[in-house]
Length: 398
Image (cartoon, rainbow, N blue to C red):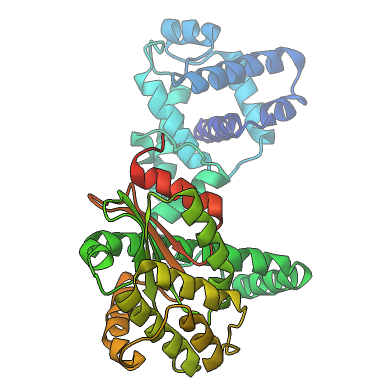
């Protein structure tokens, strides 16, 4: 009888395991059993498997009725159990699964009376559960098997893995990346352009914020050359150097803008950034400020345009070019060096704004400038962009 109980317990354990893993071990084990006994045993296994999926395990109806009448299992069920258990393969997870299913049996309302085989299985499952390393297996349902993606996510969120890649994997990734970049060097150009664009946008934002803080210094210095009506609502301010090649290309654009928008005031910030390299850069700027202070706006504008019209920049401008352009304004009093203090203030202002070179152009309203109506250009710019900036500064942009 003891041997029978042990065999029956093994059968129940193996049956639950096969049911939980989705394998058809029952059909293989029962294939060698005679037809009558196999049918009974198969009925018992199918019933157990179906109720296991629903969380409640019920005994076969005939066996349950027999158990209720006599208190003992039916002969067909016992015979089928013995033959199936003799041929059924066992798995390492059987103790946990058996304990779980027996717990479900105990809670099932369909079970009317405990059978002898059930008692034996309970004892075997209890002994096996105590030997198992899984804690409290009989007190809670078996954990749902997680997918590889869920396992990976869990390990990352719980911090189980300190590194995403092993040193060998990181080394291999580096080799692959290098090979790809060598085969596609245009990617490096694209990345460089993207970085430069991001840095440019950050620079413009910083300069715009500084412009708003320095409105008075930009618009109220009477020693700085300016052309246009004194009551203008919009100002275009340019920081430039006569030796700058981009400034030379920008000069005709500014002339066209002045003709198209005469209602705007144009402020010319003489910023000789190449003075340390070429002396003519400093002399040209000092002469320009002197002409403005002594001869006025028209004389200054003629001098300004005449110097750029020479096409001499990047060290090509000479003292002769400067004297010729200034001669149209007439005789000047004093020496150009006396204008150095004006140029020093302009240099301090340009650096405080954040300009890194010439040309630097600002389009802003004369009053109540803010981040929504100020436009900054760090470098050369087309006529259409300047006109759009004037519309925005005047409030005409919709």
